[in-house]
Length: 431
Image 1 (cartoon, rainbow, N blue to C red):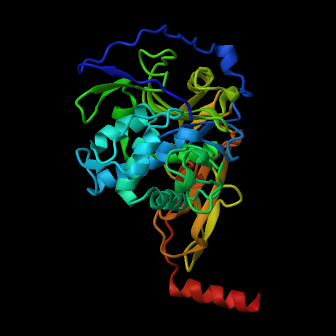
Image 2 (image 1 turned 45 degrees about the vertical axis):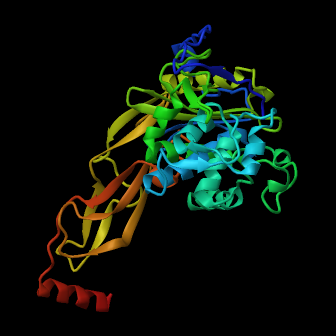
């Protein structure tokens, strides 16, 4: 991972960053209609944070090296500890000899951590997020799990719990194992690195933001002060160049995490909120870039602008829509032997420009089959139906998150009297 030069400052004043802000033009209407956007990266994805709707994907299900974007998963576990009261921001973390040695590797992103010295959890989180300090994250991993190896086990278990089974996690930072020496995870290769797909990373980032939204108060900082045990102050500068005042400042961006290794190239997990829509974007190995390139940021900005120009929500009244091949259900012992069914209320769907909102695919699921017992009341729920745009092949991070409407009876049916029921049995006997 890349080398960073640290700057010490005498006081607690954080200066303004002097830089030229890149103003990215909004996509015009004609360009916005384009559907075959190509991002200069090996893999990319853009989703709606709230619903998990996928707006764009490019080789999004193939595992790739992810470098320090790994730290999002590590931070999820750390923030979980904070929320459950097993850890607090002011709690002190004592630095081990191996972690101190790692912090002194000049080739890596780090803040110097001294063996036997104490640093607060908040200090280490800020260093891990803003400067991508590797040893700071290892120190937190040791605090949470007792060792980095045990922490990696927790990372793997968490991915499994989310249904992610195609990834490779060998350390808490995203470093190449070559930097970890004898401390690497047992059985992992000397040159191995963490791998996840863009879609996997989107799942991780979404859980992090949804469950611990306060994390954005950390990731939206352009700078922070890291106070050494000696009392000296180190100025941390966020590696995310899309924040306000940074070189590729983009409206609404407030996170999340960069990552760079030789194998991973330049990676970025971004998030932006405009109005009531928050996007999460993943760009992996952007144009085989290095730390100095802005490609991962300019391509992320391009992707964000494209999504906002392309997609919009629309509320549809589905009460008038018919359920394919199933317009009625049988009513056992009913005065009428069938009851009409339909969908209840409205659903909100995402439409891309050029899609026809009237062209819907409805997939019903009945809880107890298509037969009910009399009496039946109007509005009795029989199951659910997923509603999707027929032209939309992208779907959702999890299919269960697709828009759904209840399948209900549209009329009431009383139970037939004993004479009617007897006559039906006679007819059935002779038929």
